[in-house]
Image (cartoon, rainbow, N blue to C red; front, side):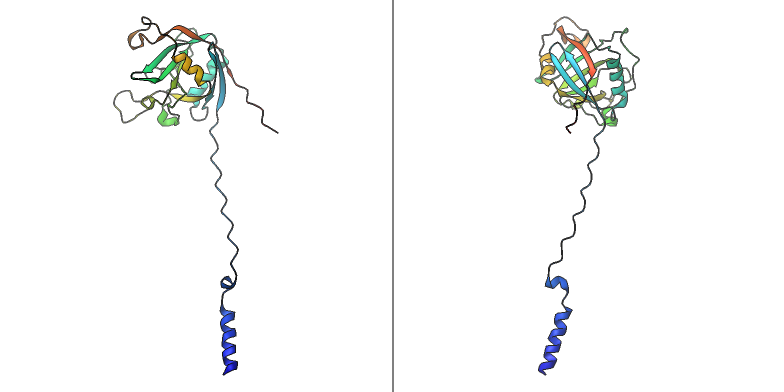
Length: 221
């Protein structure tokens, strides 16, 4: 009887899984998903009489509008132009925009470009956004503006009635928002400007001296 009990005990011990006797090694962690590559951009440096503004343009997400802006840059048609308009949001003086460019001068304008709405590009009007001035969609050419503060009402809204295409945002200020705010604070003429623009024209327009593609900083070795 004793021999039978010992035999049964040995049989039961041999039937215990190895995992119960010692912990199994942990499974290797699944590799983390690689982050999506950042859309391609290009940098431009805008030198003004108030200081430099470094702007990152969305050449992959907003190619039509970015390429149009770069055409003016490469042809040096923004050189010796101005920021000529400043607009504050009524009741919210910390919000607004400054507008500059060729001031619709036909001698400097290239043909107007197709409109790229924010609903297509995903480039929204946040603080420091550069966007194109226009009348009807498809009339933007060589005049642009930079926002101070978030401007959701400038984004496309397909559900809204009328002209709901918004403005064509195509980049953001990387450095120099202090310069942009200085331009917004510049005194305005009470008499210059027509229609809704009356009282929005900067009395002494801020000079845009040059706009050039910015050379990327060398990568550390």
